[in-house]
Image (cartoon, rainbow, N blue to C red; front, side, top):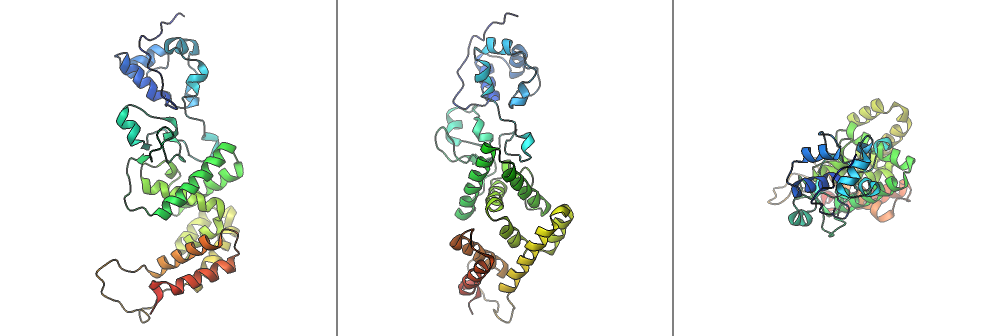
Length: 310
């Protein structure tokens, strides 16, 4: 069938998403997206975005109408990540580049839909979430950045072991109700950063991360045993380590530290200060340090902190 090419064909931007380009083509040719998709043989449903959405289309018709090769069109779609078990590709706009969108309001780039993208590859601007968080610490952002790199590497190398570990980390977050399986592409900046930070811990020192989470959390331990019966041994090991942390960082008794009137921010609770001490110990000694060294160093940090001084 002889199909006439579109009279107006603005070129796609670098790394532009196919659905974004089709929207701009429709606007340039003064028609609706639905009408254009019908003319291109794409149907009148959802505009194709993923590589799997191009399975039953008439490539000759599409390529003739837009004057692009099949390879060029396929390169504008999102990769297939369904068989990896980790949702790192989003089918919705959960983040964007303020600078690029200010110049082209209808623009959407492919890498904005990937969970590990944190800066725009076009202009270098930090990507903005739909629901931003103003009180996120620099430490959380740094840990999330490391998690993003770990996720990107696992996806690029299709490392099944690492991808399974990341998937397990997200499942644990879901069971403990501190996240969801789709948190990596959440429109909430805080939820996404927490998920990426969990990926960092889950891929570098998962046992210690589980230990900190389970400290004083009997309900969480029960939920994990029920959700992952095949991993009971590891859960019990983490639970045992968490009890060691509890002995090293006992809760403060009221007689030790009477309540004081303050006009600023109240000091952190014992559990919070203990967690901060454990994180600092990990940061100082590194992932290769043994358990006893980590506990000893964390104990020293905790005892010397303002939160436990008399």
